Amino acid sequence: MTPVLANRTFHMKTALALGIFSLLISPAAGAELRGDWNDRKADKVSPLTEFKAPADIAERYDARIRGFVYPPRTGDYVFAVTCDDQAELYLSTSKSARKKKLIAHCPEWAEAGNYKKFPSQKSRALRLSGGKAYYIEAVHKENVSGDHLSVAWIVPGSDKLTVIPGARLSPYPTGKKGGINHEIWPEQEAPPVKGTPKIKVTSRNDPTKAVPGGVRWFWRDHQKNLQKTKANDFDLCFLGDSITQGWPGDLLKQYFGRYRPANFGIGGDRAENVLFRLQHGELEDTTPRLVVVLLGINNLGMGNTPGEAALGVALVLRKLRTKVPKAKILLLGLFPTRKAEDAAKVREVNDYLAKMDDGETIRYFNINARFIGKDGKLRQDLFRDTVHLSRSGYVVWGESTRAAVKALMK
Ligand SMILES: [Ca+2]
Ligand SMILES: [Ca+2]
Image (cartoon, rainbow, N blue to C red; front, side, top):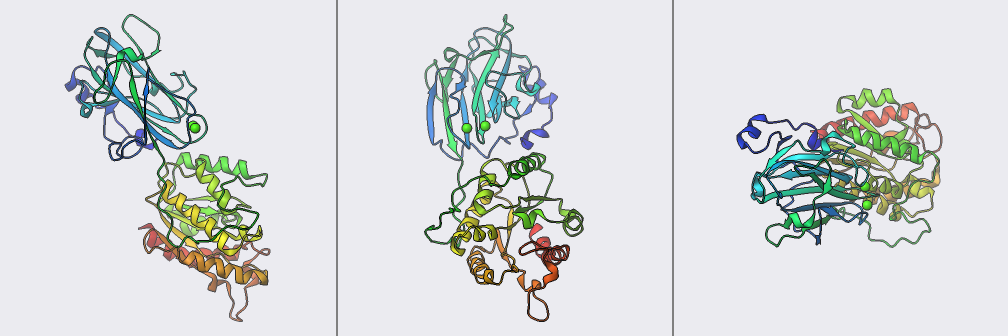
């Protein structure tokens, strides 16, 4: 999941001009794992006695270990990095941080101590001068589950990778030899979504607590979505429950094919299940331009009040703003159902959702008038059961949102 690294090219000229490095992967383009690391002060800084971060410390954080490395003697050195989930290793030709170059990277998680899972984990042989100080930096990104990072080297005269010891390191920008600093930035949550209902959850089912879906196909479909996430080959994403998942492939292609749509609907999902999916890798590091969200009907089915259902949706939208901050969101009002007693609740949820439209990144859209026939009644032909759309229902969805999608894709 490192598109930032995928198209880096090897600049022989730069490497030759620098002289000291025999072969570099690329110049540092400033396209590090996440943003500009100097923008924000680390939330936590801890000293390390070797080039190895403590393991399994948290979920969803960015980290950096940087300082100076002092080669014991002049000769060729090989550096290697291992991590969970992603890391990049930079080295400078001098003490200057500005001259750093990417020399190795770990594109996906590897086991602790395994520097051989990906060829890119190891640098080429680099000629360094004994006793001189070189700026070194590892940036690290953890999503969920296990996390670790370490940087090892092969010193001249040896053929073994060993973690760089503290005696050969000093912290940045000043400090004495004997260690290096570990800086951590926890993931920053986007600001709350406008119009988030200010209500207290009183139902037994809590839509604010991320939990996996209870249906037997949840994990299978979640895995499929993680594969789609990894492929990152879509500009338009549909996020929701079974009503989204039910899009006939040919119709989706007909209406939205030019935007390379991806379907992230999972049957049975409530807001809290989608929240779980987004917290566990779905859409991580993807670059959709628009996400179409239709969510909340299963919360009503679970006994949540309209306000609670809308609160769950608001938290999903906030998480989307965090995960894909550049994407716009088309928030659809809940569709009507064939159950007459649902009508008032659906309307109430939609009243809440309409308030989340911020006029910029989140746009609310209600197409429910299109589900009503000339007789003023719900068109039965648009449904295949109480809540699910028939093929004709998806035609209505496609026809009535294509203009809005087109406008937001710009
Ligand atoms: Ca972790
Ligand atoms: Ca991990």
